[in-house]
Image (cartoon, rainbow, N blue to C red; front, side, top):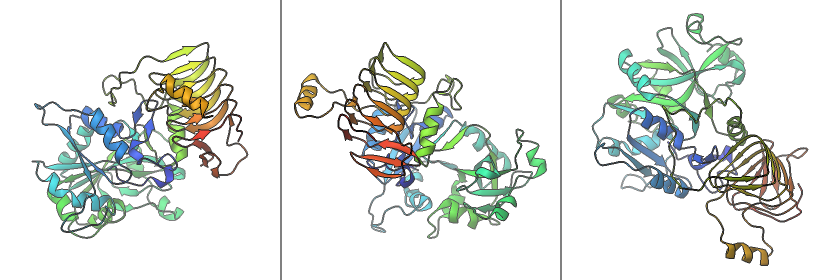
Length: 416
């Protein structure tokens, strides 16, 4: 599922959909669920997209190629007008309903439905095996969450045999939340926790083929809000409990913190797991070149040029260029889509434009710098003491994080 607007992640979704947002210096969010599928042995993948799809489609087409012997594919299914409807996808269930005709042209028993914008590593063969073993009609992946952190998540009441008897989408009433806490018997099977927990839906569903067809013979638009609750008491619903790292990257702050966590000595998500690699577009960029720099807890992507700079707790994306005496702290820099030629750099200089990248003598803190941004010399940027909102030169503060929008031009000497 890669079709949402991603309004909470704006301005990072100003020119792209959420699954296309760059991640960890060289990846895109959509690489995570696709890699999980491939590492689990599943290679028949449909990508349902709708909003600002160009960069997502381009990335998929350049990144994932299958040989003719494995019968694998990634089919991109964008919202389309048909004889039956001219409307856009109106929700997750509506998107799947409209594409059943495409799914059913392939032999299958089960459908695994995933979100395109979450950071986690899961072997999907395990949830399929449990689905078969329990005789479930629907299996919902769930993660134990402390009661204090379940806001905005779908919660379920799960019996000791993992069957689901109640599902509440994003409850706010504390009494309802406390009534959905994990049973003592089931709690003993989980890793220890000092706080009571609920089982929250990860937005990962396994449907038996015929059950999915019947569940969508209506006008329901969303799985979590409508389809799943409507199936309670009518179908066999089970929970698959996952206790690994999982982050729903739905807000600017969540994106910022998930990226910077990767710069820690022992990051919660391991991109270095050779048994389950994360695949992405092979760019054939040169190794990064770092000259006379002071660097501490930093992830640096391919093809970067950094000179005489101080970087602390940063993620520096592909093709990033930083001028002399740049100071970056708690910064996610997404990099650039291309290198400028010497002729282009001279033309920009003649026109009074900074080149792509960060100029000399800049001080930037607690910020996200989107792709192809041009930051002139002597620029100082920080969200400290400022409120969320729009600022000059395509600078936005959201969730307390300063964001330099994609392609922004910030003149030399600008201070915020």
